[in-house]
Each structure stands twice: as structure tokens, then as C-alpha cells.
Length: 248
Image (tube, rainbow, N blue to C red):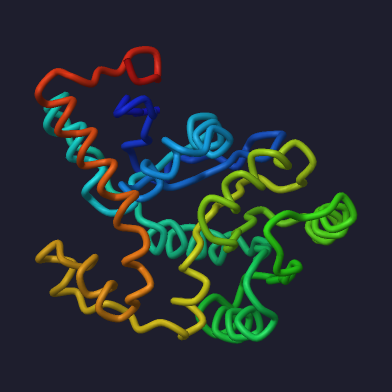
């Protein structure tokens, strides 16, 4: 398994095809970006969840700059939409079960409707959890029971970062699934609530700009993104160093 150590995180840099479903317990797949890195510097539980991911994949291209500049090695990109499309196609070929956890009942219904057309061989189930910062023990019992009764191969979680990653890390040992993917905004995108970004923006590596134009609330992430680039600058001039997964 090809993993590249970058800024204290072991980032998966290989084909999604190599991710096996032959495991006995649920594996977690999370994404890392400058925004999630910035959040992780202030949230120790979130940082632990990312570091203990079975598969931590590159979301976008900019976090890879740390590896390129410091290690001379690029990281393979596996963004949330890429992860979603790959595993949905794989589940469709295998006739697997897929569970969607998060978002509103309306969005989940749109996802089920579209998935029934795009991926007719998949059996889909969904659950919209209470909209609150922290789930109670009873909330978690109902959520986990809903998932395990269905027994999906893949569990997609869309509860925004960092809540989704921390929840999957805390509860993976109770979940009867092969793979837990935290993919956040992909729920809205696939449901059609957000416009798809034209490929020209991706080719120019300006998808972040188009996304910000379409969703100005993303500006709130910029302080966290700024932390990543500030730390990269400090690392480049030798002030900030990484050893054994922690900053020095």
C-alpha cells in the first residue's frame, strides 16, 4: 500500500482499486485538504481521527504541495467526488448495498432517486440523523442500529467536516460495513443542490475559486487554509519540522 508521509499524515497515494473489502471490521476512508489540516491543528480529536484513518486520501491538489516541496514526491489525487463515483460504480458491478448517513430527508430522497437510475444494481438505504452538534447515546444507538440492520458494504457519511470523521472514528468498531467514507458536500452535489463545476476550472486548478464564487460561505474556511500555507512556509525555511507525525 503506497502511503506518503506529509505534515505528519500518511496519505494514500494509489489506486482506489487496491482498497479491499475482504476485511472483517469496517475500514475508514477520509480526505485531507488544506482546510482539514488547518482544523486539525486546533482539534486534537479530529487530528487523531485523520491520522488513524485506514485510508487518508488527497482531496484537491494543494495539500500535495507540502509533499512536492518537502519530499519531491507528488500524491495521487482522490477527491470526494472521485471516491464516490468509483465506489458507486464498483458497488453497482457487484450488486452491493450502500448506506447514506447524513443530510436532510429531502436530499437523501433525491440521492436515492438518482442512484436508482445511475446505479440500478445497488440496494440503497438512508438515514437523516438529528441536526445537532453532538449526538446523544440514544441518537447513536438508533443510527448504528439502522446501519447494521441493513448491513451495507459501503457507508457514505455526509455530516460536514470534522463531525463526520470524528463520528466514524469513534463508532467504526460498532458498524457492520466494509468501508466508511466521509465525503461531506458530495451529498449535495449528487442530489443536484449544488452545480457541478465545469472541467475547465479543474484543468486550470481553479475549482476552489469557482466553488467560492458559487458558495461564498466557503470564505469562512480561509483562515484554516491559511494555517496550512503558513506552516508550509515555515517548513520550507526550516523553522517547522515534522517527526513521528507531530510538529517540532
